[in-house]
Image 1 (cartoon, rainbow, N blue to C red):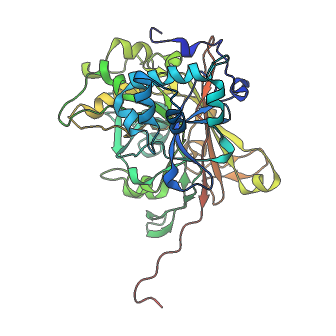
Image 2: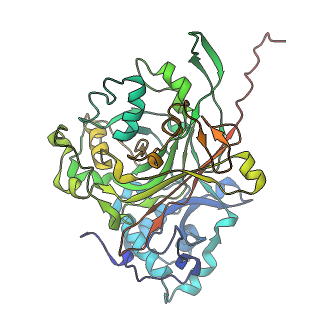
Length: 447
């Protein structure tokens, strides 16, 4: 906890009253960063903002108003544009300087209140955009519980891949199809093997969600230059919620021999707010406790600090809102409640392993944690686990059942970092509603 500072003080209150409401995701102890414009404004007006209660502080306007100086001013200018990549490239010290100044401007009794208050935009009047230009997206597989549940169906004699406890398993996914929360997810077409042995092409019949945490990379590394585990946190800028939409029937057919491709690249949804590493300092937790029989991490993936505080205590939930619930005004049904402390590998280990061959990560690159499933039934963090790969229907509170996601279903992720003695902070929502598959396009000679 040596990195705690005045911005984490649980006694702090904001003059923005909605930030003091119990249960808010965005108290003054959070101050996540995002990119927005007012509804009705041209996309070219996109600029950086800071969430505080139910308001957004317009960073571009705050810079123009002269509310920053020194390192905080440089950081604010870097965060005020249409993407957060320039700030991410500056590193966590710059983000911390900006956060400290924002905390001073927004806390109760701040002398600058009269200057700052006109610069607040109601969240209800804002459209959120992707917070960064994402050049690359890598998705990991780091929960033993998720991996074992899937493996018991396909590899019952050895549910975990032989390398799982030796390295953080991952694949390179598609950055171009990462979308911000709220955008519709179109059911994909794809090729799959039917139970009768025939190969078929058409709309996915086993569409799934995966509840994950996303990490945005800050400063990158030069190509060919690995980074020691001790310094991996210097490259870890901030976090969001991430839904790795998965077409399971397509995935089962295409994943041999090279792994997921079209079953994963259809779309990935992320929450729009980036909760900085600085904001999450109070919620650090020890690395996952390994069984005595487990192999010890190789030296390049083992460090005392990472073992002591490499994970974060974040409660994560997934909800399902069906068309019938929406029509009847019913609340979404919670289908998953898990915690990020269930992950077998830490993000620092993922970053170090990713860079270990000299692969260069860049500011704004996105890493997914993998499905954050835990040991209990309620902590199963995807439909495949919740329904035993579609063989055991999930019954919702209103009596509806689901084997897989149906058109019109909306998946909603929420998460909060919590610890006694500190003010909980949240991530905002990550939403996505399933739209029908597109009709297959006609060819030149089709009637």
